[in-house]
Image 1: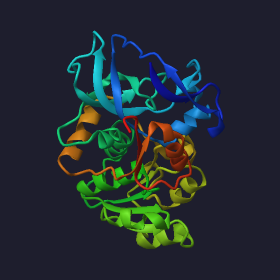
Image 2: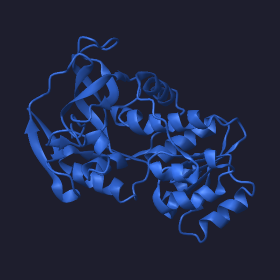
Image 3: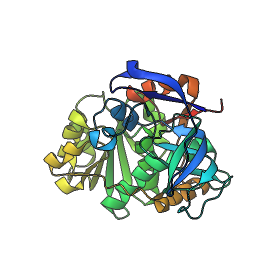
Image 4: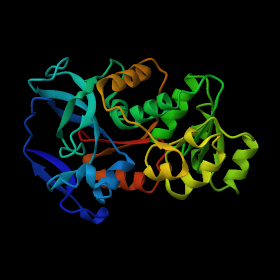
Length: 308
C-alpha cells in the first residue's frame, strides 16, 4: 500500500483527501516507480476542478493529483524498452495514476533515465514544465536576435522558457510580479512589473514594432492584453489557454515523448537550465504546495518529496 493525495469529486481545495491504495501493476507500456519527487503545476488544480473533461472526465474516482515525477523504477511493462528496475527516471504519469503519491505509474514512452548529477527534485520538473518550454520555443522557431515576450515569466514554465530562449540567442522580456524581479533578471531577461502601470504601454515602448514571439503562461485577460504587442497574431502562443485561437494565436503543440524529456534533462546536466526549485514539500503538506501554485504567487518551481 502507498499513500496518495487526491479527490473523490471535482471541486476546490476542500475536496482533497489522503488515502491508501495498493501499488498499481504496470501494463505493457508502463513503468511502476517509487516517487522521489513530483512537480506541482497549474494543470493539477485545473484537473481537480474538472475543467478539462477530455483529460480526466472519464477517469474513475478517487483520482490522484499530479502529472510529472522522478523516482526509481520498481517494475517495467513488457513493451517498454530502454528502462530497467532500479533506474533513476523522470516521466509523465498516466492520468488516473497521479504523482502526489509514494508510488505511481509512468508512461514508458514518456519516461527516461535521469543523468548523473541531476537531483530528483530537479528532474521532476522536466516532464511537464521543462518540455512545455522546449515545445513552445521549437514551435515558434525564432532566429537568434529575435525578440521574445514571456507573459508570466516567473513561474515554472516561464523561467524555463527564459533560459532556453537565452541559449538560443533571443532577446527576452518577461512580465511578472515585483517579488520575482531578481529571479527574472538573473536569467538575463528584461523585467516588466505587472503592477507598474499600463503594461501594454510599457511593452510597446520596449518593442515599438511588436515582439517577434509572445509566449503566454497566464491566460485570461492577461493573455488578451499582451496579444496587442505580438508582431503578428500567429506569433502568439499560449501554454494553457485555448482561447488564444480567438486572438489569431495558437496553443502550444505538446510532444509527450521520451526524446523531449531527454533533451531537457541533458540541458540540466550541462548546467544550461536551472528549474529554480524554491519550495520542496513533504507529501503530508502537498495541499500547501498546490495552494501556493494555485495562488500564482509561487516563484520558480514547487515540488513534493514523499521521502520527507
